[in-house]
Length: 100
Image (tube, rainbow, N blue to C red; front, side, top):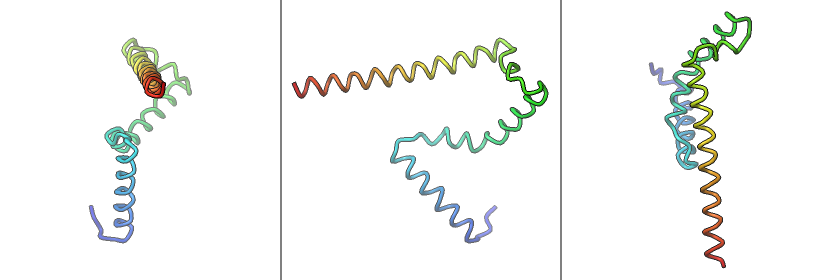
């Protein structure tokens, strides 16, 4: 709902600048949109789960499917770091070959 207030206008400009900066820095926008939409719900659910288990995070690893998703996420992050390191080494080797 739009109120045509000054605050709405400044908020519009702020998010426009944020989107522009994210685009210039090659930061993907869809994860940010997902975080804005799902963040509040995920936080409430996390808090409920932790309260129900007296603060123990083991509840997230009890079920095999949850453990599989955590393992998949960890593997994905490790693979991404490995790819970045490999690309940096290739760039460095290409620059050395070009210079020498």
